[in-house]
Amino acid sequence: MTEKPIGAVARNAADDLAAVERVLAGEVQAFEGIVLRWQAPLVNMAWRYCRDRGRAEELAQEAFVRAWRGLRNWRREGSFSTWLFVLAANVFRSDLKRFPTVDVTLEEVAEPSRPAAQHIALAEALSSETVRRAVLSLPVRYREPVVLFYFHEMDVAAAAETMGMPEGTVKARLSRARALLRRRFPALESELDSGGTGAVHEAQRRFEDG
Amino acid sequence: MDRHENKMDATQLTELDAILATEGELVPSSGFLAAVMERVEGEARMPAPIPFPWKRAVPGFVLTAGVFGWSAVELVRLGVPAMKAHPMAMPNISFAMTLPLDQAGWVALALGISLASWLLARRFVGRSSLL
Image (spheres, rainbow over the protein chains, first blue to last red):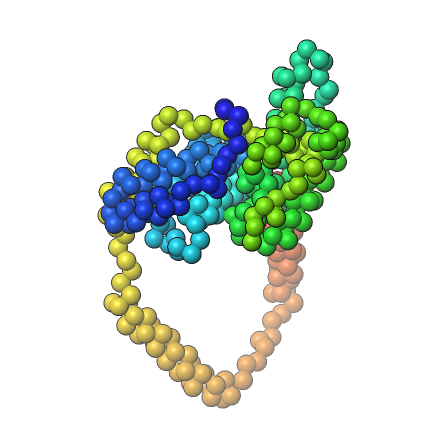
């Protein structure tokens, strides 16, 4: 994995539109451009839903095939990326409903321990992964807003658009989800200003850059 | 609407947000693009699905609806006078004949309770479909 933010929204809409027109005109190979542009965001989105690399690629592949089948249904009112994300979220959601990823409750997820100084970097990475996996233990109605909110770089409007829900509903569910996670991991409640781990500084840097 | 209005203020971020926001980017495997295109090309080669022949089917639907409608009208037209002419009377069944039916009621109740408990158990293990 590379440590780069996912610039999922900033893509060339004109390229997408041109590729779609060519595909609809019968040029199957033009779909390759769409896959090339969107494969990383879709695989990463699927990864956040299931945290299983193999399954994430299968889900993303399925999403692309559904997009291919339904390309004629894309109305040019919204951006292609929005349509693709909505379609992908539906694919991921329905698949995970049939085959859930985890069967542990939030209470059963272990609290990350405070590391010894010499192992801080490794322990921090493990702790962070525990917290990310804990998201999958949230009740379904709260899990998806969290997944999409952070996938869309903390943009409530984009997450709401992808879920097809009003922003207010997403905000309320997000707030409840964050409360559940904070209750499970009280040590993570500290604000960035109070000084924190590498992940905190990385997030702050990304916010300042973005 | 300015998208940044919806974004969280960096100063409000907690460590939890930081962890969830700083997810490393997963790079799709080298064969991913080829696998997707293989499936897409496979679908493109497949003949287009045959559309349902609505034009041919409509007369059939109309005819079926007409037959059912006519049957219902005839049933009412002939059935109502017949029922008036021969009112239904309950047959006189002896107690000895109805005794096994009392037992059947209990059997039906037991079967109902069994079905309900089976459905409840399936609900607890998270399977909603019947099979």
